[in-house]
Image 1 (cartoon, rainbow, N blue to C red):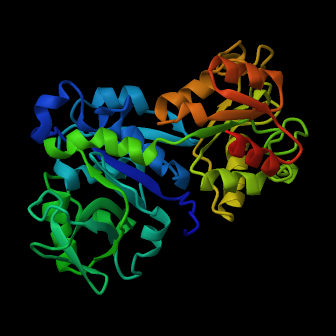
Image 2 (tube, rainbow, N blue to C red):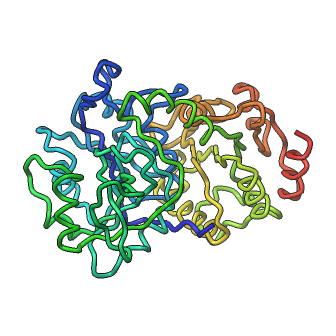
Image 3 (cartoon, helix red, strand yellow):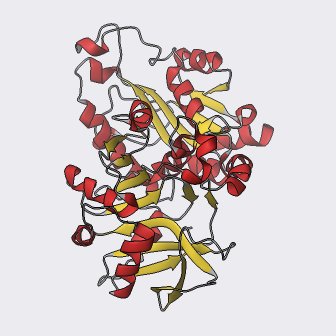
Amino acid sequence: MPVVSSPKNIDLVILAGGKGTRIKALLGVYPKPMLKFNGKHFIQYIINNASKYNFKRIIILCGFRHKILFKKFHKKIINLTEVICIREKKLLGTAGALSNLTRLKVADFVLVNGDTMFDVNIDKLISSLDKKKIGVVALTKNKNQKNKKLNNLDLEKKLICIKQNSRLMNGGVYFFKKKIFDYICKQNSSLENDLLPKLIKQKKINGIFFENFFIDIGSRHYLKLAGRKLKNQFEKPAVFLDRDGVINYDYGYVHQIKNFKFRPGVLSGLKYLQNKKYYLFIVTNQAGIGKKKFKESDFFELHEEINNKLKKFNIFINDIQYSPFHPKAKIKKYKKNSLMRKPGNKMINNIMSNWDLKYRKSFMIGDKVTDKLAAKKSKIKFFYAEKNFYKQIKSIINNY
């Protein structure tokens, strides 16, 4: 498995502005990406799956029923990445909508459809871009050769070509360089039917094939299968980890990489958990922010450094929840008893509400009684951190 890179200067853009005319009767008042499967919004699956790449920002292009998406996601922080919603005041289609990105000074970006899920390796997609091209598209198997929604495409020496009855089709995941904005106009146009054919004709785009999980909720036929397929692909057990004293030595208000040191067995233990198909979550009290011991930006910068270290071993954290609250905080908005602060369990519950988890196999490791109480409130098993993380994890998994 290739090492996942951190495209910290690259935005993730999600197209979520369509009306869903093919399944309009099933949508009711909701935009298509907000359809629920297994109690989770479809767009949440997309965001969760992308969270390991640590994008600069996640930008949702909204149109139809935009207020619902704004209320749920705008200005939210997911795995330390800010989510921003942009409203299309006038629906301009899947290509015209991209002109709105200039309002946020977007440069290079990964683009995904809000009604399809294609689990591609983003690092590999980005690195596959030919230096002379301005974009690359991920292709998947064309299991329905009559499907014209995503165009029937093929590859000829990595170049994309339109081909009827092709064995491949557009997977709805792209990487574009900033130069793409020279080809986008503020008028109604389709990415699939207008922009892509133009780029293909001018040989400005190449492609790469992935034989990975793919699902489309844009039609009634695939909609019926979506819940079960998503559950089979993404429902996993999880380990909830306190940070200081569990992942690293607790020297008190750790906020710089020079003072961050992994405890024995942590790297091998995290890798073991990941290989066993466990989600890795961090839930950490960070009262030092509220007490002005260090800045919130220091916390973010430290975790960027931690992620860089973990990626060298192809380990990634799926989500991080942190609490800057404390009754004696010096920053007014953080000076209170909050359920976000352990022994409160809101950090754990926030993760539980957004991810498909196998609860019976999930557990938490902490080093304080407040960790134990938070786990108890969320009804997950708890273990105090032992001297060697790897040995402890292996023992827990083998005895579960």
